[in-house]
Length: 92
Length: 413
Image 1 (cartoon, helix red, strand yellow):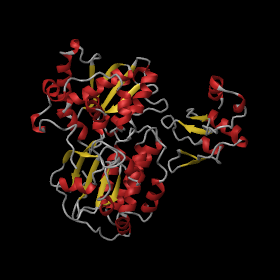
Image 2: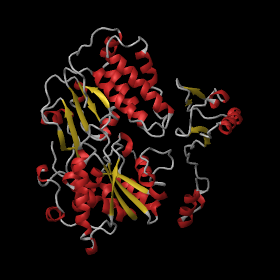
Image 3: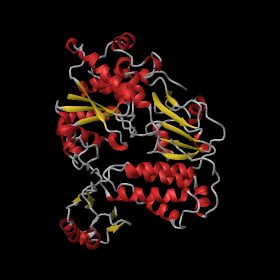
């Protein structure tokens, strides 16, 4: 999970930086600088509070796309022909 | 070095090429069947600045559009140092319109919009006239979809893709928060292909002559020709078409570069400075320039006069970019004004307060990615390149000593 900021809606209130200083800092003009580090489980509750308490609802939590890791096929040796091709398509 | 393809044909002084002359010279516009794979094979990249593969963009919109896509031909050209889009529109409007009509067929669009900067008067007139010429032929199988001409406000960011969509939908040429990007939801909520007018002109030629023909020019992995704008310390500033891979030196020489140029701006205000000796041998190739930490951008090559001050030139550009902020996002509104003012103070030796250089270094690392669009990123990138290339001059100015080039105003444009 990561925090995304709607930069047009954001008005520099700065409540988010108070609630989540581990991930959000403020620049010289009071606007959030968000760390690219993901939101850990320990920080998730406070992150959700920061999103809910932003006066202009400029924040949202978004999932960070995980890289796709291909899994080794387990039953390939036992499956042949068109069924093999269908099985490979279904695997992640 | 020079390649006459988009700009081939009658000379500029002859005005816009008529439909009759265009078709006599190049043949009628082909159909768009099978065009996307040909564009893919050609490797043609977008010419608006991002350099994204054209075929991939078209394929995405074709898939998402469901027959209701929109084609937005982008001729806003808000970059002050660039003149190539207006030159192409003014001289070869039918190449641009052919490209737009081909795009409409290929992606399944039911609307085609030509978005032209209102300040590009000759281009607007040429496109208007060309649209009229084609309308007379539409019944005979020419363009199936009528072409709408929309003039864009004369601002730097009016050509940003979400700003263009916003202007057409709501008369407001300011960027919007993305996602969704125009290819997802654009004009009227439909999947929208935003494509630079030079890209469309190149497509109009590829559709006639093929991908192998397109790849015949060029000296590197990236093939084809590109229209560039050469200006600054040259005797013959203007627009010319070159083989991709032509060096900065060759372009500068052909335009009559003066001796002793110390710095070159590549890519426009959104690009960056290079020391001349680093720049001369660089090929004008988007892929190579990006991997070298520079940028082809919209094809601007601008030479700083030998007696101009790089700090003053940079201050002017940053002042312009700060003034052109859409003023929607705090980091852009405040950050660009701050870096512009600090650079302006440094540009006048003795006015800087001893902390300005340190502030500039700090701020230059804080702006990228913190606006709704890439305007602050462009300004930050330009500033960082200036801090590198003109490092000695910045230091000299901060210490209050006279500028090494006190005699000139440092006008960059």
